[in-house]
Amino acid sequence: NAGVTQTPKFQVLKTGQSMTLQCAQDMNHNSMYWYRQDPGMGLRLIYYSASEGTTDKGEVPNGYNVSRLNKREFSLRLESAAPSQTSVYFCASSSAGGRETQYFGPGTRLLVL
Amino acid sequence: QKEVEQDPGPLSVPEGAIVSLNCTYSNSAFQYFMWYRQYSRKGPELLMYTYSSGNKEDGRFTAQVDKSSKYISLFIRDSQPSDSATYLCATSQGGSEKLVFGKGTKLTVNP
View (cartoon, rainbow over the protein chains, first blue to last red):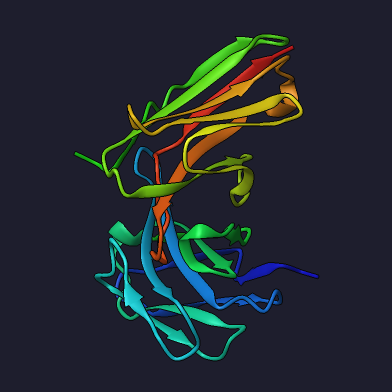
């Protein structure tokens, strides 16, 4: 089992460019999450999906959109990247929401110039 | 006030020391308590999981939850250089999809 996979591993964007971060899990989990991690700020939830076909905002959703493509895949889109979106992005999945272990991917390092 | 407060450190200890990492939380509805370990340039991984109050031990690691004082602790005995990582506490309430994370404490264990 690969667990949670994320692509790309690293990306450099110019301000105003768009991109989609991809995430897939092979554990048949219902819940999937996108976080960003910044120095001194910890992990902050951007969006989450409790099940296929549903998505909800987290703590810092502005500037992002998500798509739960199917049970395995959950993508995060930046429509017009800003330097403030420079961060490390983690995708995670869980079998049963907040009361079960969240399994994290390896992260995507994004630099917006 | 953030829902979960965690001293970011950094914390530096000699090999073999006992390490104590702590978090406080404000929401009395939190029931599930976790510690995640994150090595440099990696994703977090679950280290310890506790439901409600009490202690849980796993090898050199002990997790404690005191719901009366809203205090979460992780103890590491006989610390090793391989324990050098950032430790994040996390908690959630029943029925919630979301975990609330502390900011993490960076630990270095020196040989």
